Image 1 (cartoon, one colour):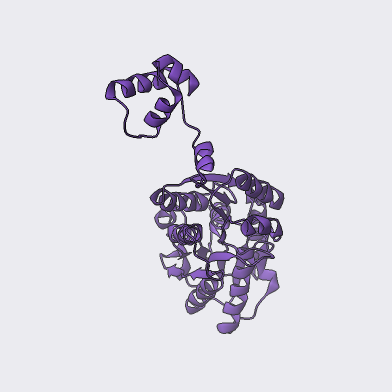
Image 2: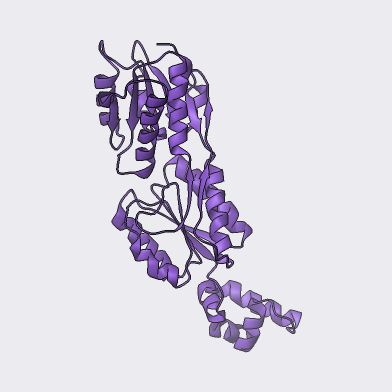
Length: 327
């Protein structure tokens, strides 16, 4: 500001008034200040300004597993829409399913004095956030709950959706249904496996551990699961993919198979409706998940003091063809 004032031939106070759109500055003087600002490339430090005024920093933090995953990209976009409506910007980081990275990101956001944090947790220990929450930084967990603290949480109906998938396949006559899920350490994967078990019980289908594969989805691991669970005389006639990444790897592994099992994917994914046959999915509104979590966070930022809330959003089965194949 001193450089701008010197170049424009005015006082620092006059530069401050122009920058902050305050009245009582002659138009010609304001023009000289603006010209000096453009010539010098001056930019306000909004964080410093806001902290000096005792107001917010104008940002929130969002921690996801992998911003490159279309699921989290859509989630990020939904959060940004709500944040923009409240005049905030979103700082986003990927934990890469690493609890240490999640902690590092969360504490970095707190050090930058964000107004609140949204977390898709990678770990099960979140006590490190308690001092920040007590100091007034609201935290909302989404897609998965916190591991060891009580906090606001927004989830989807993982259990109910998988029960519905099993029921749908059973209605087509399937009795040998495989389940391919993500790592069982992940909350959503464990809940969907629990829903698969419950779905088997409700539909009178014996639960067979040999038809279940739970691990981080890679082409190699899904390919192995296809060879062991979906081939041979005792093969499953139907399969439930535990998430969109599992479904994509599974479809690639089955691309040249002579006989394909019936398929239901938990999570919709791009082009699923254009495949042959189109993929039946358990769909949930990712944007609604982001909106609900962000709106809850901003309610806390604005001073809501009610007890921590747990919100569970509904899912729906969308039949498209792949899940309606008879045994």
